[in-house]
Amino acid sequence: MSTCLACHQTATPVLNFGKMPIANNLLLPEQFNQEYFYDMAIAFCEHCYALQLLNLVEPDVMYHDNYTFFSGLSKNMTLHFQDFAKFVQQQYLAKEAKPFVVEVGSNDGILLQNFANQGMHHLGVDPSANVAAIAEQKGVKTLVDFFHEDVADKIIAEHGKADAILGANAICHIDQIGSVAAGVNKLLKPQGVFVFEAPYLGEIIKKTSYDQIYDEHVFFFSLHAVKNLFSQHDLELIDAYAQNVHGGSMRYVLAHKGAYPITDNVINKLEAEKQQGLTQLATFQRFAQNVAHSKQELVKLLTELKAAGKRVVGYAATAKSSTILNYSGIGPDLLSCIYDITPTKQGKFSPGMHIPVKPFDEFHADYPDYALLFAWNHANEIMAKETAFAEQGGKWIVHIPEVQILDLVTQ
Ligand code: TYD
Image 1 (cartoon, rainbow, N blue to C red):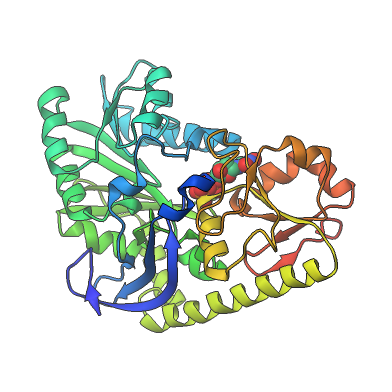
Image 2: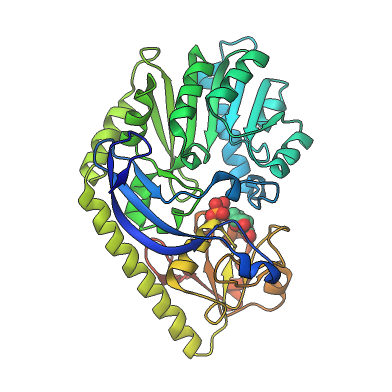
C-alpha cells in the first residue's frame, strides 16, 4: 500500500516493472557504470481513481540542461499544436482584447510559438534550460523553473493573471500536483481556462500500451481522476476531447467552479469510463497480466528472428522504448541498434540495455530485415516517409495493440 499523490488516501500497487533507468537518459560508455536505476511500479487509488507511478525519481535527475526530448521534431505534432492553439483562441480567447497565455512545461515552444507569432502576451515555464533556450530563439518567452504555487505568485506579480493556462504532456509529469492545482487556481482569471493534454488512461488500457509508463509519467489520467484531483482546488472539469496523438490522448478543459456549464462531453465520457472499468481495481490487475503477455510475445518473436538470422533494428529511441527494452531484457543481441533523428541521442546508447543509437543514413543505405517501431504513435508520419523500406522487403514490427509483424499489403 502507498499514499496516493492526488488525494493522499491509500493507493494499491498493481504492477512492478523491476529496475528501470531514466527513460530519456541516453548515455556514453564511460557513463555506464554510474547509471541511475530505480524500482518502477504503478499503483491505483480506489478513492480518486488516479493511476500513478510509485518510487518517484527526483525531478532534477530527469529534467536538466541535457534533456534530450524536443517536441518540435515531429511534423504531425507541430500541426497538432497549431490546432491546439486555434482551439483555445477560438473557444476561449476571442473576446479578450489582450489575452495572456501561460504554458506549464513549454519545452521548445512548439505550442506557445503559435501565440507568440501573433504578438500575443505569453509565458512558458519549463525546468530544462537547453530546451527553453530553443524556445527563446523562436521568440517564445520562457521562465526556467518548475511550475508551482510560488511561481504562480511570481507570474502574477510580473504579468498579472492569465486568460488561459495550457499544458501538453506536462501536467501528468508533476508529482507535486497539488501545488500546480493551487497555482493554476491563483493564476487563472475568473473566466480563465486551464487546458491540458495527456496520454489517456482509457487508451493505455485498451491498447496495453504499457510503454507510456516511465519515470516522467507520474499520472495516467482519466476524466474521473482529473475531475477529482482538481476539484480539491475548486477547479471544475468542464469539457474534454479525445486527441489522436501520443497513442491516444485527452484534452481536458477546466475552469473555476461555476464559471462555465459542464458539457455533455464530460458527462458521456465519465459514463464510458465506468463502462470500461477505469474506476475498478480489477481492470488494472488485468492490465498487469496483459503487459506480462505482451513482453513474452515480443521476446519470443525477436528470439525467433535472431535464430532465423534476421537483422532487426529499433526505429526511434523514444522514452517509451526504454520501458519495453528494460522490462523485457532486450539488448543489442536481439536488437542491433536503434535509429533516431534527434542529434543529441545519436552516438549514444539506450538507457539500461545500452543499444547503440544511430542517425538514419545507415538505415537508408542498408535496410535491415525488420524494424521495431518504438514511435508507434507516429506510425502514419513514419510509414509515409519510409515507404522504400517496405518496398525493398523490410518489415515493420509493432507491439501495440499486440505484438505483430505488419503486413502492409493487406492493411
Ligand atoms: P515520441 O513518441 O514523442 O517519444 P517519447 O516516447 O520519447 O515521448 O517520439 C519522439 C522520438 O522519436 C524522438 O527520439 C525522435 C524519434 N523520432 C524519429 O526518430 N523519427 C521520426 O520520424 C519521429 C516522428 C520521431
